[in-house]
Amino acid sequence: MRQMSKAIEKTELYSSKFACYVYYPSSQALFSDWYKATRDMTSITFREEMVAWVRVIEKCKPKYIYDRCLDFEYSITHDERLWAAHLINPAMVHSGVIRYAHLQPLSLFAERPVELLFEEFLNMQLPNQYPIKHFVSTEMALAWLFQEENMQGGRHF
Image 1 (cartoon, rainbow, N blue to C red):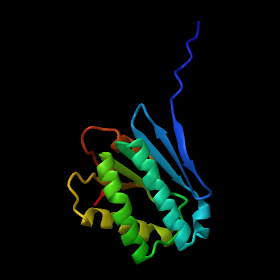
Image 2 (image 1 turned 90 degrees about the vertical axis):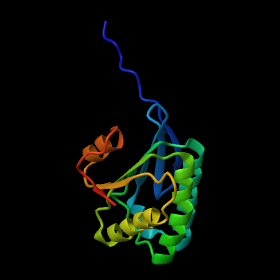
Image 3 (image 1 turned 90 degrees about the horizontal axis):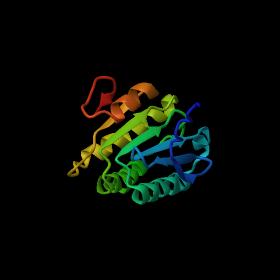
């Protein structure tokens, strides 16, 4: 008799036309997906999405975050970057995030502002700051995210 493989338990915690957050309790991992509709975001909707992300993080308290930004197309302004960093990073640290893997946007218009956002996270120098690495490959990102020791493969700030 053939055994059925056990389904991976997951919970969708948030979904909008801009993003979706799915939590995997068995691995304590939060996966975020950003959609091409981000090109139509306004400053207000960007801020609303960041507040929603923080609520999700505070609810599930993930150890690992995999942020798939391939289709992220919104260009974050300097003021938005500072505001978002001071909103999101302390929530992640307080919730116990220990590793953050980021799949880079394909849009060159969005890539640099997103990288600068993560630099703002690290510039805060919070106690228990988690490492953030940027990747172009899902396989490399997941390998790094769920390993015990750091390995080569991503750009680490």
